[in-house]
Length: 71
Image 1 (tube, rainbow, N blue to C red):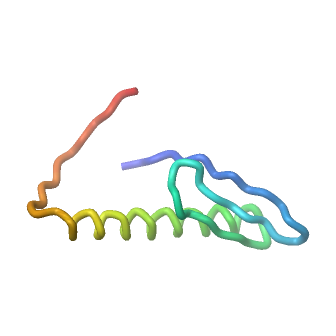
Image 2: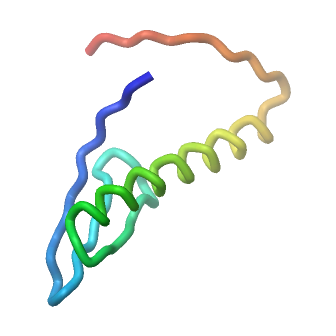
């Protein structure tokens, strides 16, 4: 499944810093824009995995279903 996120990248001195608009807690930095993009992809995966584990741990019953949403 493919998801699209908005990366916000700023330059500060010799470094670039990035965050993802749609996901709280996804932040990184790098020497190039491409490095920041790759780091953001890794950070997205880690945050989603962590949030999923936390959510499942809080659930009394775990049910996995496909969900399609058109907005």
